[in-house]
Length: 183
Image 1: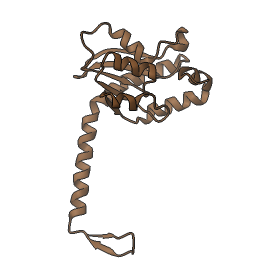
Image 2: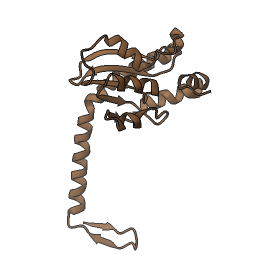
Image 3: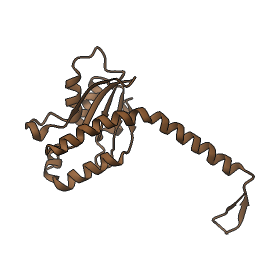
Image 4: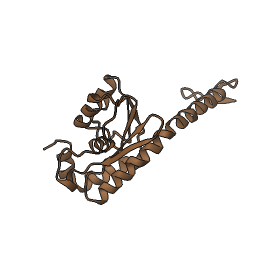
């Protein structure tokens, strides 16, 4: 098999290494995809909550709290607009609805958007071990800080989460800026 050499337009003899390397990379990628499947299913619960919040006229951030084995403990959504309470973010709603837990270290907080500083503080305060983020492109929040402090952050970069957030920001920039503390 010959592969074009981009520099001079000559072909380089592959001897099967590139083809084998591609197969190895493909199998590694498939393994990674399989590893992320449980987190994607968890994200579906949070995304349902975000869509519900959007339909109610609120900020479309949904969250859910799971055990590491995938058992759903609670779900919630940002209800700041609906209930006139600035402390009801998606993550705090899910956290409150889970009730008291003996320990939070082995729990998984799933959220459609990177947690803000308020919600990142909640994760650190109660030592939630893993945070699954639907997307962090529209808002980075405390993702880097959480990682620096030993939290396992899995960013799924989900197009549906990003699209919902972008639609909301375009339609309600005033409410969005209020939600993230911008004036």
